[in-house]
Image 1 (cartoon, helix red, strand yellow):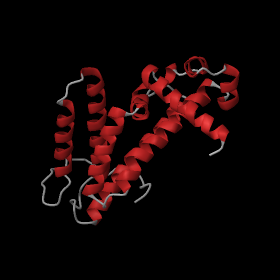
Image 2 (cartoon, helix red, strand yellow):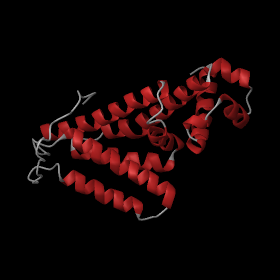
Image 3 (cartoon, helix red, strand yellow):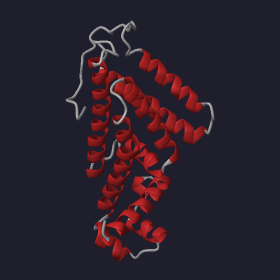
Image 4 (cartoon, helix red, strand yellow):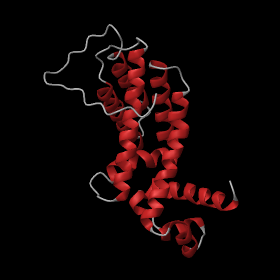
Length: 214
């Protein structure tokens, strides 16, 4: 990594901290320049506009999420061990790192705001759900989970558990919130296992998208 790339990386780390506190919409060239002690003209040379800065910061948060959450999970054995590692790393990252905080808080922040930032968040969100679904499919292939388990359903439930934990942890600061989230995860995971009896609602259909990786 050359000096210019190192500078850009340091600026994006600072931008992530600011966005985690003010929201991604509150991140501007001006707020970043004031916080980082840099000139606006220098930041414009790096990013060009507020939107480009937001997209770059979101991209940095995404890379942190991949590095801290997805890669460690994919290094675990297929099926249940992989899902357990994913969940544990996801909770830790969302709780302890500004990038994890930003990556999750940006979804509701931009859920009804059209534009390139929302479009990128939608792509990232779908990729995440697909990745979780592929982990479930691997567990089915390994014989750990029921053949009729619904990967898309579990992915949605897991996302809801983590998002619920994240917001309750930030808002309430209740030390019991994490243990409740972990119990909810165990309940959802138990529903996948071979031998569990899970009724399938009438009219329920499989809506899985194509997997993004194994």
